[in-house]
Image (cartoon, rainbow, N blue to C red; front, side, top):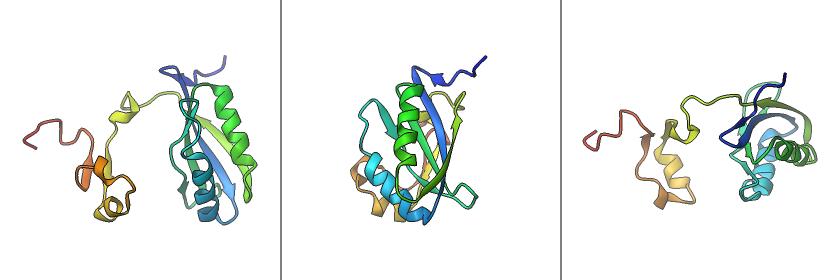
Length: 133
């Protein structure tokens, strides 16, 4: 039996990429796919990591088939040597957009959408939704 890979009607996966010049490939892939896909797929970001597979690309798509199509686009990108798809089976927290994050002052200043960010520091539900902090 195949594991369930659709969550809330979406298929989500982490695509591990082995690439030459990982930073260049990450910038190229995100530049090519980061703002494409509409509701069909979202390439969340491209993280350069210190590992044999030196890029990690989270993909959210309307179907498993669409994830495979995105992986094909990634594989065709110059400098990509190999890929592995790691399917997301569940999220903690659910829904995933309730997760915490942290934005540094430097990241806020570099943001192309600073008006959407309130202030640097911890983002999300911690220490809670209490308006008094």
